[in-house]
Image (cartoon, rainbow, N blue to C red):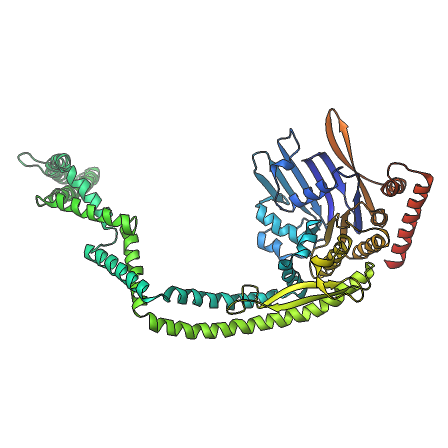
Length: 563
């Protein structure tokens, strides 16, 4: 669970430390006080996308730290070489810099934002008002159902079969062309292959030719240097270094019988003589390599010009042109034998399509079984949320298209509901009011959270449009959820705030010409006044305070009998 949140220079929050408790935590405050900024800060340290606009005006950067405890055993820890400390705590940090850079750490170890985001999604879920829009979008309904039904393994199995089938279809599409197009392509490939084959290219030929050309262009200067070096070593009219070293070796050897030191010097002279002889031979070979026909440089220049012109068409290097030649030969062969290849691939496609459809049927059956269970669970949850007459179902339809399949399977799923007795089931977006939508989303999120390892759920003003008895039901539902998971809720409803185990108030103020936001945990007396404000506004009458006290008493009574 999230035990501590530290915020620095996030929007209007200059500095804040919030110690969240197990159970049900609530944040209240005036509109615009900065309640959602706290949620934005949590999202930032969880690796969610942020903007430099989040940094407080005048600050060079912002920082958010979060401490988690009582963590589940996550595979992420082993995969990333990070683990909770000896106290079982995990410290997440994210620093937002003014130049757009981010610095992320977990228990002091640097991580990427992507790694932090993957971890964050396993630690907590943030549910905001935008989730209601997702519930209205039928494109999201299949994802909700798969999450509830835990169909990941079947979906992965199907995806493998589908992509194998799709790959065969792509190959067939590439081979199926009309006769005129085929003739044009054959002509093009035949010309390209012929031009490259006539060039008779060899690997790295351009590099060796360029080196030889540069050598021949500088032959005069190089020959003078080589010849001078060879004469110095081998001699011609005069004696060279090799003969002089031989004389030195012989002179030293003549005294080696009477002096061990002369014997060692004689050995060194012999080594120098052999080294000088080898060097002279290498220089002679280099000199001989310059002996070329008068037209060799012209021939090399012509060959390099041909290669240059071919590079403009077929690749930046000879190796790339040879690869192009191989691909062209293969493509020409495929076209020439396309009928045989098409027949073979069509057989493979038929088998692959059957396998994909079989996997899709297994996936669909699992989804339909999950849909029946989900329907009962959602209706039960909504009954507890003061919607006892609602009917809910997942409506299945077949995919359109030639195969009736896409990457998600063979199913199109849309959630339908009827909120009133006698009314037919219709798409949620056509009949759900704001308050009904909020409760449906809460019911769905509660059901989905049961299959997740996350220990913290955050609800950011998801109670929009809810009031009266329905608000009381929502408050009790959140309290019930908080029996097994930590719940954080931003709300304007006194019924929900009264049910909290820990109540925080977010207040905006001014100091030194700057706006700031402070977060304070409330005691019982302060809670009573805050509930009265939520109910009656700034006019805190005795009746309003008495009503707030009664709400707190009723909440304590409910939690005492249901926990």
